Image (tube, rainbow, N blue to C red; front, side, top):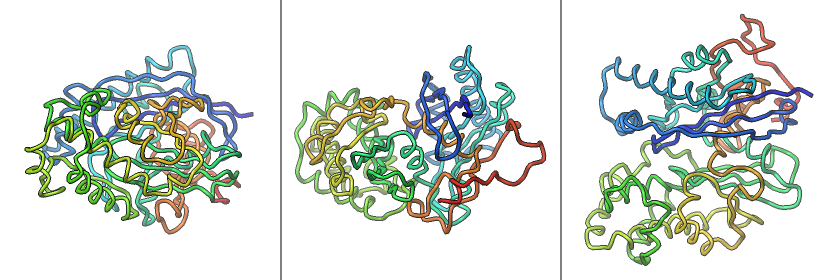
Length: 386
């Protein structure tokens, strides 16, 4: 059996840090299994603040953009070096920092060659581009990795990411990837963190403590559910145009005035309830179990609202052996291995691409077993099945 050690890295929409996971991959293609070995995170500090400002539209000179890209890559390289001590590293898959996403345009900023040079390992990046080029939304890209890691023959599962945006993967009790469903739902931590900055002058409501002391305001709840449900019903990849970068500024015009008359705790509690109720209107409610991951897992109030709103059991992916904090980093490692094997990582039924995209990603450094001048993807039976 082929055994590889892959690193997956994820930098989320909050721009506050990088998650990295070392994963043992056994087998190839859609027959592979993945076993996390260890994971680690590092904060981005002032670099994160600069990336956030750039993502929000601050104009920068080309040299400044290049500096940010190189600095982010250097931070990745250091984290990965510390993580792989004593272990081999066969490939690295990096997401990069999404500074713009409005299909057909998307930009995951990072300079992968710096990482490849620092580690002496091949690095795959820009994983959304191939799908976008074939008319897809470029997202979500994790459902096929959810299928490899979290499918179960006995129950229909929903894997829900509580990140900057909430998205979901539906895994039927089936062995075929053709049965996978995946979709973006609505703004999640993008909304909660914006409200925390506006109401509390804090980057986020730690553990949802402030929200826990509040009550749901019905008028505000109706306004938020209307906006969030519109996002959920548009069946597209959410991105830059959907981010509530400033509450009441181009997102919900009347919201800012309403907030000034409400207690911060009530606003935050209401937002948690609105996210949960919007998710409950989707196919997620028809599954046997909901497994949650992402930063929202640590928000106890959001989790309580999910328990209230959803008619099925809700639990973090930790309960089935996948660390919820590092789900996306682990899945990036899986996606990187699939790319190396010549398996398309997105499905037309999920992203809307015309046909399965060619092998995704841009490689920096030489992939073991491939000639230096190779230009054609490796074809496998698994890739044809998609």
